[in-house]
Image (tube, rainbow, N blue to C red):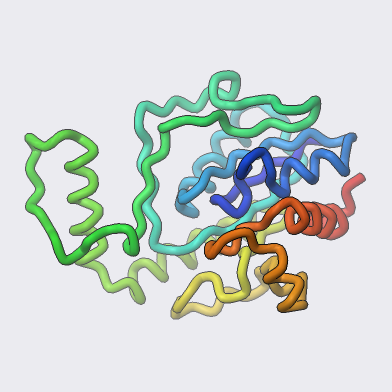
Length: 224
């Protein structure tokens, strides 16, 4: 059985630790493909899901961690070729290689007060950064971003075998109430235990938290 895992830094390997890698350890009869990457958008994860589902590899189950809204991910010299982009770190676990393919922007990381006009003579990535600043500044984040995010979440719900947010409050300040999507925080249902798993301010899990999450996902999907 082949399992596809998608998401952002809450799913990607951090110092060789992640819940997908722990899932591979406790389910030796399955092969896990982890295509999550830190900071990336929900649309990035959907894109990677569509590419691997059409790659010829038979994917039996899709596990989808939904990232934060209002992110943009751009692709720099990226070609989807699984042999070139994946590392096999154990007999049944594949993850993305270290790379500089993905360039991600978030409103909180941009100085939106310092806008520069678009200039086609700028280097490509500086041009795109300026475009991102203008894009974020021109849109009301409680309207178009919420619409885009809700549409993408609904699409994911229909494609994935299990999809979830990391924290109960995701997406933050969203106008839309996204129904029937779990969160890891809600599944833990113990605030002290939830916080004990954090290793940083971003609520990323260390080994113990990843082991707990892998076991819970194994139970939810009845994996062997």
